[in-house]
Structures are given as C-alpha cells and as structure tokens.
Length: 195
View 1 (spheres, helix red, strand yellow):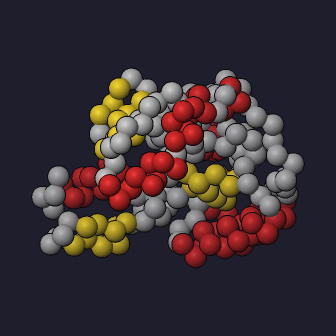
View 2: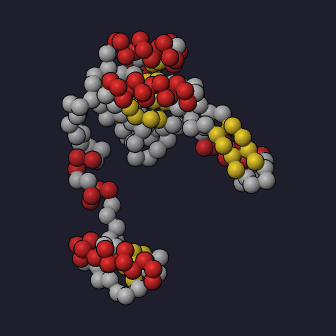
View 3: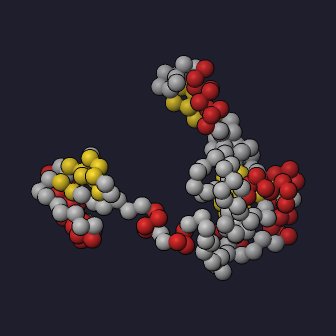
C-alpha cells in the first residue's frame, strides 16, 4: 500500500477485481483512475466528511428522541450501584465532563460507576427502555473528546472495572476488564517480560 497525498494506491488481487469495479463511481468522485491491478480510493477525513456540525467549536442540536434524566432514574441506578456508584454532585462530575487535555467540556448531570458486567447490562437495559443517552468512558484519555458528553447524556464510567482476569504466559495474551488503564496493563505485562 502506497500513500500519495490524499489518495492511497492499493494492489488488488485477481479474485477481488469485482469489488474494484463495484467502487468505480466512488473512484470517479475522488478523481482517481483505476488500472487493471490498482485502486486509488480517496481518503476522506472526518472533517471533510462531517462539516462544521462535528467540530469542537459548534454543537449540533440535541435530539428530542432521547428522554431527560429524572429523579426516578437516579433512584433506579442507586438501587443497582449503591450511592457510591452514582455521582450527581456538580463538582464531582467535573472530571467526567472534561477531557484530560481540557479541550472538551460536557454537560452531564449523572455519572455511573458499575463494578461488573451484570451492572452494566442492567444499566444499559434500563437506558434503552427509557431512551436515555449514554456515553461510555474508560480512562478518559482520548484526544478527540469521544468520551465526553455533549448534552446531558449519562456517563457510564468503567473505571471500577479494572481487574486483570487472566494472563497466559505462553501466548502473551492478557484478558482484563474494560476500565483497566493501559499504562497499568503495560506495566503488568512488562513485569512478566512481555514488553
């Protein structure tokens, strides 16, 4: 695979030429000329594919399809997680509403901290039934703000789900929970001689 500016050249094996012909209109749109054994699909970056409505400086309109969080929702989540697993205090919500680079700011009024997949399942089932928007959040160290709520979505923080389930020293495969911090995982496998 070779990269030329905004286009890429990809060798197409003989058995995949039908696929190559199927995307010819896309190639014409990108002004790439296919040859018998080469495709040159245009690489569309997110900024070009999604205009200003997806940029950090503007916010799209909130969808009316999603319900607002109510007191009964908070009570339901407290029954599942206990009071320590439900965060509603504005000051305590700041780390869940802000990315680590302080570039994106969310407006969530509720963060949930489950400790098991069963709790996550119960939360997601309830949110689906009530049409409550959810934003999953791991370590909140992403660079694009994908784990930051735009409106009043519920933040589903997986930070309490941070155990290493198993490590196979023969294959080097480690199984861990979704909230395990990558740096800690790296340190763990490094001590085992796998980094």
